[in-house]
Image (cartoon, rainbow over all chains, first blue to last red):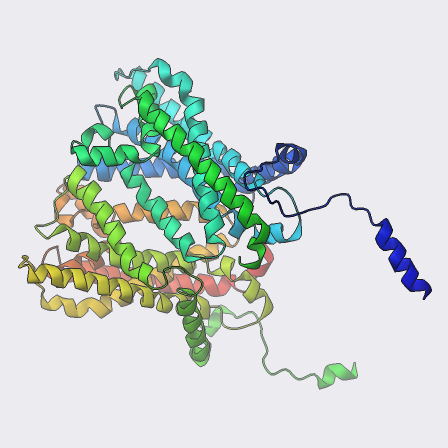
Length: 292
Length: 285
């Protein structure tokens, strides 16, 4: 009898530090909460940096080897065998920039889209705003992107020193904004995909396929100017990554198509993606643990 | 103390020494287990999915379409006078089988660490069943290829299948051996060094470009480059298949034999490394 009263009492006195309730408003993004969990964000980013080179043979050297190897293959196959022109830009610079920018976008996209599946263990055990994971992915991928840009800079200086004609346009000041746009686009797409992959695993395989094919309709291995067929040109431009890619190429290498109109289209596309993505993400995070 | 004397084990598991060979005998005894895993793998390939098996029929067509646009239309790479869809599809099907097998085998220790840590069975069961179960998916893609092929034949396309098509089962065996051998080497290396895993994905996608899939081998006119291409053991397999299926491509017994030799060597090294690693990998993974 006494015991029972104890329980009753304790029930009344129960006080929680934190109450986690499923969020009902779809578009709600609790910035305050994300800010409160900033230490978690920082820890995850640090963890990702550390695991990138701990327990490795070559350590951070991989960040250099992979892009260089990719460039060698691209130059041999697309430049050497297929004879695809590069708008008069040294092929190494052309491919290196394309590979780095595309690599950043695609790795952000695949990390975000797998955020529920690959973090299911930790999501099932502790609570923190799930949106932190995509933000972590976008931040950590900046590291390898920065290293690749540094390699690009080295080659760039080499080519300038040997007398190649390279023009830099003032639009280069937009570079950080363009990268941010790409990151948001990846997160938007990724959130949409991640909310679907929790239930249907084949979407994960499909997504990997989509990403690997997407690169072909983005001017990475060929310049957009080479697409002379008008319909095809239009179809390529509808890909929201294309205007950003071309704008980056235009500002850094002097060749490419810079168009405010198409960039605006990309930005609008990204905004819509983010809104839809956030809605789906919020909806799924309530119940994904049961189907993942 | 008394209990110790009475303990009786049904199986005794000890780290295998290399002297016991590649452990193939034990593997043969456990063939029912391979069969079990194959059935499981095939089931998960279409359960809890939206499109089920349909996706496997369609997916090579997507890739084919993209290749036609980019490599056929934009880059204008010729295809040995073979209709582009058939040319690309043949390469895509074979390459996809190879690359998915390779990726799966290369992740053996990592993906099965949970199971491996709990029960004992010959570890080789896992990669072998993976390679076999992927045949299911491959055959669906092959059906797509055959349908497209027949469509073009009825339209009177210039396709001349040769008797070398009979080598097809052998080609599949070589692909399996190659994927298994190389995959086992990679998974043995990656238990300790995680960075190889990241590198590996890039490596596989680059390897495809070094294999005549988006362009015919005959298009590589530079003699040095041509020789380098032949070092790649996948080149001979793809070219043999193309030669058998529609009479275009370069077939030579020497390069096919070279591919087989590569496969056998890689397979032996792979199994040996895998067997050595399986003793301790659970500590470092």
